[in-house]
Image (cartoon, rainbow, N blue to C red; front, side):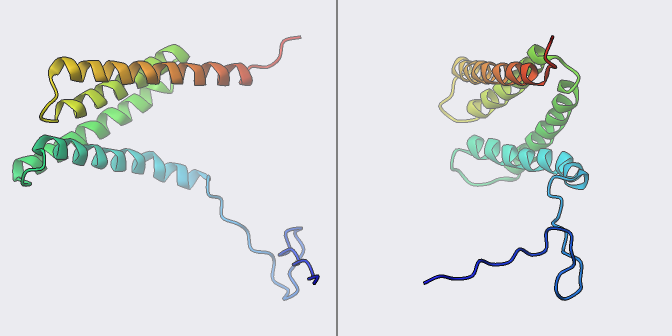
Length: 155
């Protein structure tokens, strides 16, 4: 059996059969979305990080007021550091940019790891350094290849 192909919804700019102009699709990556994400991303990541740190610290025990205070203060510190790192990193070259994000991420992971009951200081520092080094290598490669692709060709 054959069927007729569906007609397009008037994307060529012509009016629809009803006489109305075609509906414009929303600009998902427009400036309004970027402005909202500029503040929503640090808040959401900070709340997740604070909850995670507080959950690691209590080790499955009861939730107390001190535990809630620790979680919210950790979330607030993470948000402030994230915003500061993002603001400073935009002005840096590829190597310092990668180092800054790697140091932030490595220290954040090391701090989270230290909050668990069985983590020693040396082991949490090692985990932070390992994660930071891996992220540095990944980011340096990313920025290096992206910078090469954006550079105008030389004649």
